[in-house]
Amino acid sequence: MIRHIVLFRFRPDLSNTEIRTVFEAIGALKQHIPQIRQYSWGECMSPENLHKGFLHGFTMDFESAGDRDTYLHHVRHEALVADIILPSLENGSESAMVFDYAMS
Figure (tube, rainbow, N blue to C red):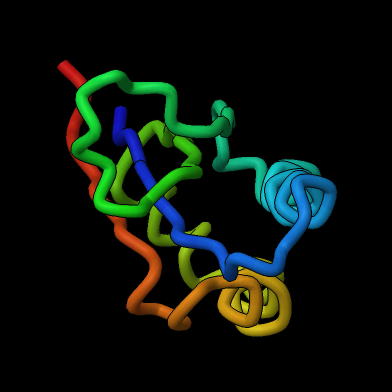
């Protein structure tokens, strides 16, 4: 299993409703990309104050790296990134952090 972790720094003018809409659109990809096994998202609630401004994020689980790659290159994912996600971020792709690992 591969866990795909993505953290975002949204533009400060975005409302909570607009942020929720972004994450709902990401979650809707599961209807079109069956390789997505699990999806969840949320706002940072760590008391450690090490978030470096990345206050929202999501995780997705995939059976394999190949399934993850299918998601990454899917036309719906690419369109969502270009049309909704990147314009919502403070500094485009500089305001996103991605970390994947093989779950044991």
